[in-house]
Image (cartoon, rainbow over all chains, first blue to last red; front, side):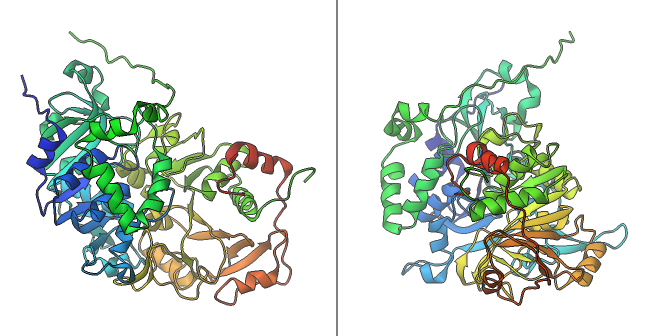
Length: 310
Length: 260
């Protein structure tokens, strides 16, 4: 019998996210653990290297709160809306506030960023890919380099492995041991989790192991690599969870207005992050009806038959 | 155009882009105007087309207009939902994408694109989103269509940063590089703007192919930062049909978020 790894978010972040760590909160538009990001802000972690394909609002908020010294990414925007203004204030010298320093930036393309996690997860020295040729990206990122094929001399670009100290993912469900099941956009969560030294799995629902074992193809990572499991309903809001709640596009638009102004951004963090004790309090502050408005109608999959071979 | 208000500039861009997709099979979609163009093409000139989204969806069948590239509507009812490693490796780099849509803050006469910075990279005037999948789409999709609004700020003599390669410094250099480095694609085939449709001549340089209804050659020249090639006789871009406008206004963008 395996032991439960179920803890609350405060305990998980306190135990597994330390000052100076490289942290990857992954999830491509779908299943972004804002609950973990906000708890990291509340625990005032500093000097983090934040890795994510698309930093999204979660890293804009963490940068605004002073958690980050460096960003590793492949697309730096508010998806469907525009810019990440808090991050822009730390990347454009003319916008820098007195006493603030520029963030360190290390950027790739999407395939390159995925490849970094793949190399990290597979314990390989690099990931080769047919990107970057004749792009200026290798000129500004010395970690994008060429390598000669040993099978014919062809030269190809390569990116180095990325092994986060901790990867945090959000999903529909897991058992207490940390066997995680997910559907919808899968992003690079599997690769980012296997690449990490520690993994925090945040889920909407804890289910019995029998539920996991009834549909093993749905498991994206095994409890074997998971350090902590946190049950956090609506923990991905304002991003979404396929089948559970929709993306809060109105908030993504609203953040564009809030984040343009440093004082308004700070006021938002005070009210919605520092001013609430945890995700349950954040959800309660919105009120139950708010999330009803984000609930999709049902579209269940058919079920498959794995067969019983006793 | 019986009874319908005439097409807006955005609608002209969408319809011209849809026409460029005639008969295409697999299209890598972006959000905004490309998304409407692709969905219009699927309902008109390319009913067999498979929509691919970089977020990890092949054969999407969106029931609503996605705001973001990772909207849940692209998943529900799709043919396949896959990891991004599979999407970029098996589908894009593996050579399964016929046409990809790109845009940018800057484009040059050879169709090279900048989506990274305005100004110096280390101390940018404006920090833009960066590559995302654009760099590898430019290299691996069999052909590239660009959708951009024209202005001297965006159609520039020299890019501040080359994020995604087009025809490099001309067709000869580009062909050599593509062959030597095993690129899957042949680069940009068209640029659709609010004023006209552009193609690329044999030497790899952009040239006007058709002028949208209502646009003038003076407007075209005044909004491009180099002396744009204009042929002797410029045909008019076909006027959108009533059915195309109806599909856009009633089904694809009923609130007019993108094309009004």
